[in-house]
Structures are given as structure tokens and as C-alpha cells.
Amino acid sequence: MIRFFTTIGGFLLGSLLLAFLTILTFNPSFFAKLALKDFAKGIASPSTNSLDKFLDDSVIDPLLENPETLTDLGLHDLDWLTNHNEKMNDYSVEKAEDDHKKFLEYYSKLNTFDESALSDRTKLNLEVAKFSAEIEKMGFENFRYHMGPFIQFYGTHVYFVNFLTDTHKLETEKDAEDYIKRTNAVPKAIDQLMVFEKRRADAGIYSPRFVYEKSFLQVQALVETTAEEHPLYVSFKDGIEKIEINDDEKIELLAELSDAIENFKTSYGKLKDLIEENMLNAREYDGVWSLPNGEDYYQHRLKIFTTTNLTADEIHNLGMELVDEIQSEIKSILANEGYDINRPLEDIFVELNEDPRFLFEDSDEGRQAILDEYTRINEETYEILPDYFNELPQAKVVVKRIPIFSEQSAAGGYYQGSSLDGSRPAAWYANLYDIGATQTFGMPALSFHEAVPGHHLQIALNQENKNQTLWNKFGYTTSAFTEGWALYAERLAIEAGLVTDPYDMIGSLQSELFRAVRLVVDTGIHSKRWTREEAIKYMMDNAGQVKSAAESEIERYIVWPAQATSYMVGRIKILELREKAKNALGNRFDIKDFHSVVLMNGVLPLTVLEKLIDDYIANNS
Image 1: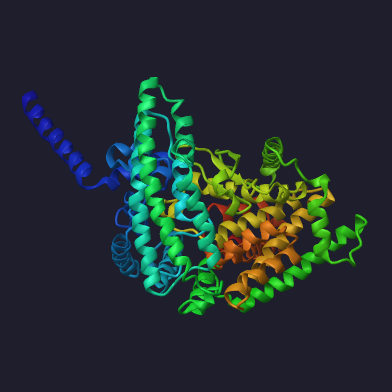
Image 2: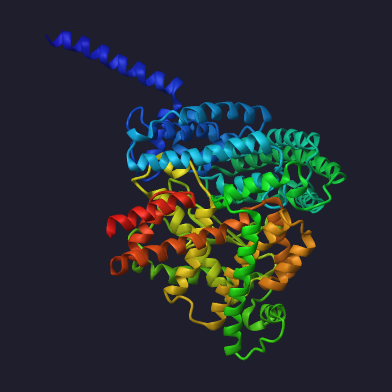
């Protein structure tokens, strides 16, 4: 009897081992899901053959082919299976075409699910998935070459360096070896993207001249910098000091990296030549209206970034109205502070921007003082969060400087979420290139937007939400929601009493005015055929932007059409829905519960968010 069961047991054990090896060999997504469940701090488990499983698989399968995202998410324990930490993504046009074929299969299957058999939550997911899929299908099939990879605003040539220096971790000798392999892999990625850029040229699609000029300077700097002074080398040298390896091994690793950087520089030299060649054919006009099917393309972009059917004219007119309203609020405060508001507002803005009371010393110490002040504001803001939110993220956020080599053309600030395993903290990056562009009165609003209760609160809560599936967490995003929330958070901070100084209030209103002006200039450039110079002047005259900041912003809107409209459109919708809920529920309205509905259901198109708020109202009436 014992021997019989031992034999059967051995057979069962062998079968299980064979099954395990089969999964290991042919189904790495099994391990990816396990790793994601572990790292994502809990994920709702979909039932077999459900819509949720289908949507989760639609996230997992591309993820396994995206080594950079695997690293960014902090899935380091998966590396033994995928070796992703030594690889860069496949940027070839062939890969993009193959991905689109797979997407069409996904798109076809998505439309076979019977809505009547779904729960309310899965119906919601299906609606969002269909919305996203329709947009993706239209974009690839009609506007594939309308945007280029080598733009001055965080183009891939800059991203590759930032990815290696900021995202690729250096904790072990293998990490260091993988860093070198990845540096050696960048030239192939650049070659692939150059093929795409040539396809754009074959289609007669070029960028404006300033895009080539600024990208050329960025690439040139990375080519002409010596290996030992290169950001890839400096970051690596600092990183391996913390690794327990002997000095001879460190010297050998640095020598290998130096060789890799030379290959990197050779590749970037070819890219520099291509950019210089394309500069000769730069398009005359800045707006996408000048591209093939440009008007349809811009409406498509507005759909992506606002998730609405608002037209360019409607958004432009909305922006003009808001500019007038917010400027009136600012003038009222200025009058109370003794300013002559009969003067042009732009002159007062210039005066405020140059007032030494609100500026930092143009030095390393002054820049550190800015980072310290942002940290103080962030810590103070954390104290009021329990009064407005039922849920708070465990992950914290730190303030960093935008890397020096890319800050000249970067935005004023941006947020990067933490890795899923927590090894890389969430951070928001402040632009300290032109120290005169950072006034003390503008700092609270920017901190509220990028950290808490803005981007960090929303993104970290979504990342840590145990009731969300993989697809809820990673399958869809839109800045109408994420940026709309962050701009709403600025207003919430005012309501919470965090802005008491009149000049800080002016700074907060300037931030709102800035987003209202964006509605005007983005649609002005891409629909109403404004020039770059006209848009820069409008922003300086109406938003109080110094010239360097206005130029950087307008150039960003030119290469990233419609994205700038998402902030104010999203914020208006969230405020509108909050007012709707307050009016319907009266004393039963709880702002914490309202925020839970908005934040704990993933990133949503605004139309879907409105349905959720309607359900919240109905369930609490």
C-alpha cells in the first residue's frame, strides 16, 4: 500500500513538475501575473474566461515584450525568466505592424462580449476598453506618422539617457552588467527609430524647424561629451560605488561602459546627421492643421486628451471666457495689495516675476533652497489629507531636479510614479534651468499639482488599490482624468486653507489662468493657424509667463497637440460633478466619499466618470 502510493505520488509530482516546466517554457505570462500580484500590492483576481481575464491578458502579453516597462514597474524578480533588465524595447516598424495585427484580434474579440451577462463593474471596464480601442485603431490606421520620436520635449533620444540614469537600478554586479548591455543596445533602438523617421519623410511629414534645431543641440551635446563626463558614465560610476565588488572589477566595468558609450555616441552621431538633413525640409507651419488630414488629426487628438466630443472652436471659446474670469479675480487681489490695475496685467506680472522678494539666488545654494521649499510644502500638505480622503497611499513622494542635460527644453515640472516594488520612490521633478522662472508665490500650486493632493495621490492610490485588476491599473490612461484631477487638486488645496498669503493666492490663480490660456493657444496653433510667435506672445501677455517659460511651453504644445487642453477640461468636469452631487445629496454629501468614487475606480474617460457619480448619487439619495 505504501509503495503503491509512493509510485502514484511520484507520478503526480512528476506531472506537476512537467506542468511547471511547460509553463516556464511556453507561458511566461503566468509568472508575470504572479510577479505583478506580488509587486502591485494586491490585485483583484479575474474569473476564468471572463472579460477581466481577457483584459488582463491584453496587458500582460505586451508587457512581456516591453523590457523597459518591466524595469520601470520594478519587476526585477522576473528578470531570471525574461532577462528584460539587459534589453531595450523593439522600436522597429515591423514590430509596430505586428503589434497592430495582434491589436486587431483583440479589437475583434472585445466586441463579442455580451454586456447583459456582465456585472456593473465589468460593464464599466468594457465601455472603457472599447472607447480606448476605437481611438487606438483610428490613430494607427490614419495618423501613424503624424508624430515623430525625436522631439525636443522629452524625445526618445533624451528618454534613453534618462531611463538608464534614473530608472535602471544599480544594486548588484548583474545590474551593472545589464546597464552596460543596455547602453550597447541603445544604438539598435536609435537605428530602428531612424527608419521610422525616414518613413515619415517618405510620407512628406516633417516637424517644424525649431524642433530639429533643439533636438540637434541635445543630440550634439551627448555626442561631443567625453565618455568620462557623459551622464551615462557619471551616473554609473556613482551607482557602482554602492555595490560590493572590488576596485579592479569596478575599473573593468567602467572600461566596458566607456566602450559602450563610444558605440552610443557613434549612433547618436548618425542621428545628428539625420536631424540636420530633415531640418532642410522642416515644415513651414507649426500647427498640425498643415499636415495631411490635419483637421481630422487634431480632432482625434482632442478626443484622446479630453475624452469628449468638444470641438476646437468650443474649447477655444471656453478658454477665452476663463481667461477673462480668472484675470478679474487676480486683479481684485492686486487692487487690495495696492497695485494700479489700470495698468496692463502683463506688466504687473513681469513686475511680480522680477520682484526680488519672490526669487531665489542664482546659484547651487539657491537651487537647493527651491527643492527644500518644495519639500516643506509637500510635508505640510500631507497633514490635511485625512480631512478630505478616506484612502491615502502608503508610498511617499520626493522632490528632485530635472536632469541638467535635458532641463533647458523640459517643462516646469513632471511626476514619475514609484516602481511597484517600492525600490524607486515616486518623485516629482522641478525645472531649475532658469531660476528666474521660479517665484515663491507659484511654488505651492505646482507642488499641489505634482505631489499631493495631485498626481502622486491619484497615481499611488491606483497603483496600491487591491480591488483593481491588472487592466484597471495599467490598461488605460488619459490626461483628461490624471491632469484634470491634478488641477482640481490645486483648487482643493485652496479650499482646505493651504493658501492664505495673497501673493500665493495670485500664484494659484496664475496656475489656473495658465491652464485656461493653454485652451486658447493649443487650439489657436493647431486649428486657428496661429504662429509659434503669436502663441508665445499671447501666453506672456495673458498668463504672466517669462519668455523662456512661454517658449518652452508653446513648443511643447506644438509637438504634443491637444494634450494641454486636457487639464482644464478635466478639472471643470470634476468640479461640475462635485457640485452636481452636492446639490443632489445636500447634507448627505461627503467629500471623502466623493473623492473615493473618483479615485478608487481607476483612470476613466470623463463620460464614464460621470456615470459613476450618477450611480453614487442614486445610491445615496
